[in-house]
Image 1 (cartoon, rainbow, N blue to C red):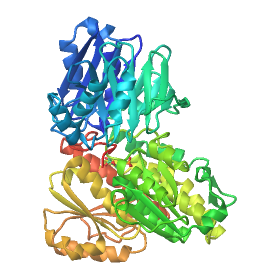
Image 2: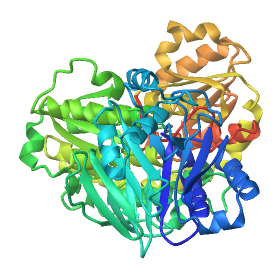
Image 3: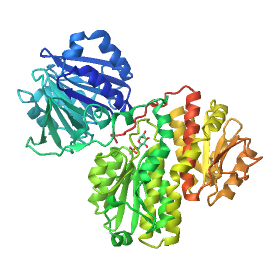
Image 4: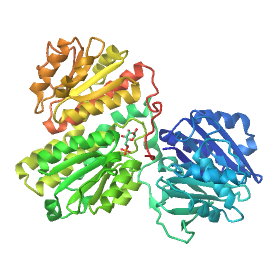
Length: 613
Ligand code: G6P
């Protein structure tokens, strides 16, 4: 969480920094700030709230000269951990003498002990942040060599960091470092960029260097020197970004979420494209780098993930059990590492993460590696930490997802998990005949997504009816159970309506006590095993006078005359229904949030990439 952008070159830094921060607002948006070095002075602007407030502040209070001639700067958009989101706690933070300034993404876990020592040495602090403690440490060690001071300070620190540091007597240099929080450096002609995510850089250059944990780097105009935290030189390769600036723009869409919902047919095409071998009736996922024998010998498949990615994993669990005939578990990443999971060399642990940076998922995969399991990743962001640390896995190729509520990543994760289950299944007991049917079904997913999107107007009308409610339950069984969880998560994230996903049978074990006319139930009565029982559960909801919005397959008349509203997703093989239904529920959540006037792309308190535990 939190986004960092830095620039050193020949152009006015403030504009580049502010535009870069706009691309990173999904990482946090409670306050923002910029620092530049100009005339051997550090100039800082900070504001509470969104990056636009910061842009206005700079425009109003910084001279034209400062805005255009300051060519080195760092900036930050914040998601508060230590201290409330206000101007004082906003980054950048100065050291005790005002000679160096720093922005930080991550958490300094031993900040209390460090702060106590610094206070005893006479330091005074303006903010409540852990970052200011780190800034003071850098200042304490800074004599003439900035990277030396940064390395010295970081050697005292426990926790995670992605940082960028400036010194007022080094107007042409930025020092950056990472451990646990991403840092990507963009190398241009006579200019160098740094950010938490390549989306903030891609408009300027496609040549990037991803720092590894424990790397520090000195950036000057067009030059990058990478070192270890012990300050010894190390080389890192330059990679080329595979997306362009347009894919991280909203275009004609009102919100990124809207754009990303409607991009799903294309995103799914990219996720599936070239990955089906219809002849052999299997999937080609070469990034898994496993021989058929290795696959056949696996004892257990465990998925670790958070949020929406975990819901995708829960759909995948059905696929792996049904098709790959494998013992499969899905674990909340945060819990997995603090238990004593019984895993070993015959188990594969797959980290599912859109961003590839979620702290708990990363920690879970490290724990699994430590215990000797095979680890792999299912990530969207190319070059992300999880993708690189696992070394094997599958990319989604869904394109940048900016809206905080995940949409296209979820459906692409489900599609890829289905392909993985097909591949593992074919290496084990799945017949060629079933494999071929699955290949046909999977290749039609983009078309089914397109058809589902045609329901937009109708779903909007239904959303209008329910936009004023305070509580909603989502119920489903089998493949539809995790989709009910995801539908509820989408709605609560962006509309602030209290929404809960339940197994349809669990309703009777508590939640049914809450049903009444003001509490609608979204019931997923698709044509998948368990449908008839779900219809029975809809009867129970109606008997308690709850309005029911049912989702059914095609023309199925199963809830005609029973449900108050019916959403008819296209007829598909049952394994595909989680994708079409998820799209319908994304539209439902989107329109409800829109009717309620919510900030859809940047819901309160949330961030897209949760890089703290
Ligand atoms: C945050 C986001 C969710 C996302 C979750 C996991 O909570 O707001 O949309 O599902 O993190 O993120 P990941 O990048 O690991 O999929």
